[in-house]
Amino acid sequence: MVQPMATAGSTLDDDRSPDRPGPRTGVAHMHASITDVPLETKVDGIETRGVTWGDVTVRHVVLPAGVDFSPLFEGLPDDLCQCAHWGYVTEGAITVRYTDGTEETTRAGELFSWPGGHTGWTDEGVTFIEFSPAEAIRPVLEHLARQMSTTG
Image (cartoon, rainbow, N blue to C red; front, side, top):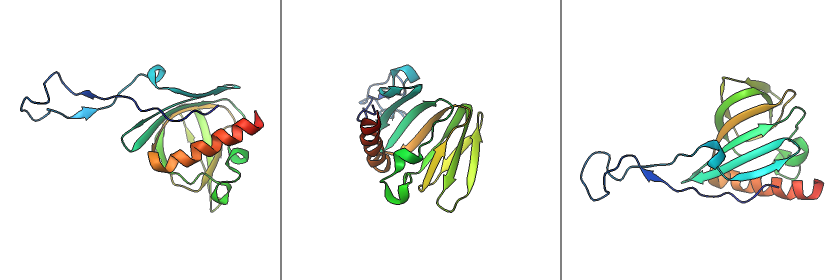
C-alpha cells in the first residue's frame, strides 16, 4: 500500500559549524541512497519509494510491464493526475497521455517534464526518478492509497 510521505533529514554540505563564517556555512542539502528512501508501496512488482525534502517530493518508481494508472486515477479531477512531475527514466519506458489526447513515450536515458492533467502506462516496464511539488502530489498519493486499498 502507499504510505504517507516521510521526511528525511538534511546535512551541512561540509564539516563547518553553522556558527563559523564562510560562503557555504549552513547551506543544507538533502541526499539519500535509493534504498534509504522510505518504501511507499511494494506489491505485484510495483515498488515506489518517496521522501519530501522541503517543498519537493522525490520518488523512485519501479513498474512492471502492463501497469496502467488510468483506473487508479478515476475519481481525481478529469480522472487524471493533476500534479506536475519532472524526472529521469533509468530503465524501460513509460507512455503518458495528456488532457488534449497527446501521447508521448519517455525512454531510458531521457529526462521528462509532465504537466498536470495526465495518465500513464508502461508496456515494457519502467524505472524512473520523479520530482514533484509536495503539496500538489500529496492528494494524488492519498487517492492512490485509497484506490489500491479497495482493489487489492
